[in-house]
Length: 228
Image (cartoon, rainbow, N blue to C red):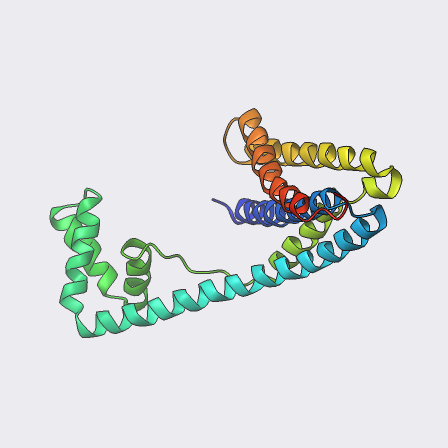
């Protein structure tokens, strides 16, 4: 996979992560407040507060989770280095098992293992990937990733709020649900087209998951309805 393609995949993943999360969370709040009998201006204020809080939170989580992954990788790498230093023959046998399972044998297998163990850094990296199934965590674009997640969360959060600025309360509720469902469907279709999968199935899946999560907010609002 080329660097450009990897960057695009990472950008899309961050965009969908933030946008979907922001939209669904704020839609749940909007529906919950509607169900609880909240007035439009209250719902707008609460929705906007949640939108900005969600954006900051999602960006921060994207940043700190990447750092946490890197710390975990570095710790495991230190452990693997120590294990190779202390039990080199045992680790060498692990290499034989790994590459024999890939179909290598005889002199070629010996040459591969000898080449790997001749460089400790290469040896450690191979063990990290092949034995522990851990890949090096790239933190070079961690700030950009956090910004994409945060901004997409903000954009997604405003989707269910916008109808409240232009429509009467009940009409705004219907429009909010419809626009949010369409946005989720479009995101699912685009994701399927960008990666792999049936676009219709993916679109409907995104709608079902998003609407199901938002329904929880509506049900909670019904429980605490201030206008029985």
